[in-house]
Length: 138
Image 1 (cartoon, rainbow, N blue to C red):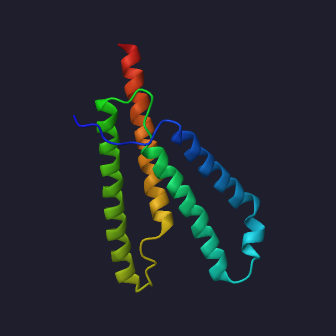
Image 2: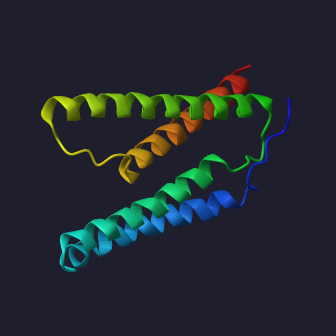
């Protein structure tokens, strides 16, 4: 199987620091973010914070493991396909709901991307732990 280019192993720590620092900043400055002024500025700041978290989650997904092999590459591919499938279903359901309720669609926002990346990362971690447990039992 052809080796896919992935980020080095130490990017895992950089991604985790990005995610944790942005969540802490969001919760620490939540009151000051709300009182900044206009609603547009508040939404923009929240979108910037969640976009940085999305970058961290994406880096975490494409970071090489210390024990990467063909099976983990296959698991990574399957979880990414599952995430794309989840986005397609979400967009279809959202468009049907918007058509029925005549709501104004926000389109593809960063919260949907956050949900998909969180889903993909959690599925990948779960599959890796399950595989490791099976190998330890044998």
